[in-house]
Every structure is written in structure tokens, then in C-alpha cells.
Image 1 (cartoon, rainbow over the protein chains, first blue to last red):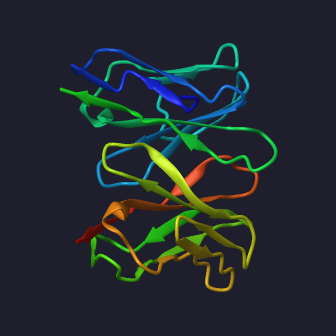
Image 2 (cartoon, rainbow over the protein chains, first blue to last red; image 1 turned 180 degrees about the vertical axis):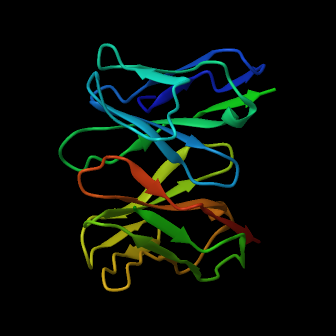
Length: 114
Length: 112
């Protein structure tokens, strides 16, 4: 399967703990995006990378959130000192600059903060 | 800022019925418009897209036409199947911003 993959698929943590999620984009895609989706809502944009450069961050991305894409391939999203309000599905998408630039989504990581 | 408004669901139809899911948008530029579908237990999948006014996107029997004058991108299908049961999201991508702005989604339930 050459689609976008995310790991883990599910994460349960206690409030105050740190968590890290990984996203592996489609191999030739140089753009990578993170979104958050809460129950009954559409995805909300968090941040976007082109190659290894983080080019845009949403106001939703508080200081407790940090994302990296060190070699322009996979990306990690870390949440420090998790809060119950962080419980959501975290989605990763990738696209190829130029051409259609269509975003293809991974299956998501469901985070539950107890 | 940009926004997308979809009709609230759930929409419940019988098999072979005609489907319309309304979507309207607000954008500062000339956005590209998308419909994504999320089947139960699966990730978001691109269903169709249109990049300029009067373009029609189509896929799997679904269609949507980019109407700039009414800022709309309504999703239609002539005859739905049980397998079309899913949540449908309308979205836009506005010019220089790469982020997609999504509507809240419309759940479609098709009964045999």
C-alpha cells in the first residue's frame, strides 16, 4: 500500500502526559499537512510543511503542540502536557507540488485523553 | 475568513433515490472546491473536485458543479446505493493558502 500511513492508530493517555504521532506521506509527495477532527465536525487545519520547512501554522496549534519534518519525508506531531480538550482524531495528508496538488489523507490517529 | 456551510444531516434515503447535498462557501479569492467522503472506519477520500467556475467534477456517479454566482458546489447523485452510506465533506482551498477549509460534514444513510 503506497498511501499515507499514520502511527499509532489509537492512543489513550492520561492528562498531563506527552504524546507523539508519526505520519509517513506518499513517497514522492513533498507537501505534508496535519489536521484535527473532533466528533461531528470537519477537519481543522493545524500546520503544513513543504519539504522540511514548516510554512504555515494555525492559531489552533498552541505552544504545547510541535510538528517536525526533519528530512522532508515523515513527520511527527507532539503534544506536551495533554489536556482532555486535545481528544480528537489527528489526520495527516500529503500532496505533490505542482500539477493537481490534491491532498490525500491517512487513516488518522485517534487520541483519547483521560 | 474562508468558510464552508453544508446542510445538516443525517440525510436518509431509500436505495435508488436522488441525492442532493448542499454546499455553499465564502472565500476571498478564487478557490478550488472539493468533496471528500469518509466511509465508516476509514479515512477521508477525495470524491471529486473543481478548480474554476462552471467546472463540473464527477466520480462514481456523483457530480458537483462550481457555481461562482451562487458560491455553491452542491453534490448530486441520480441513484444512491446502500454502499454510498458515509459522511460527505465539502471543502475549499483558497489561492495561496494550502490548507483545506472543511464544512462540518453531512451523514448519508441509504436504506435498502
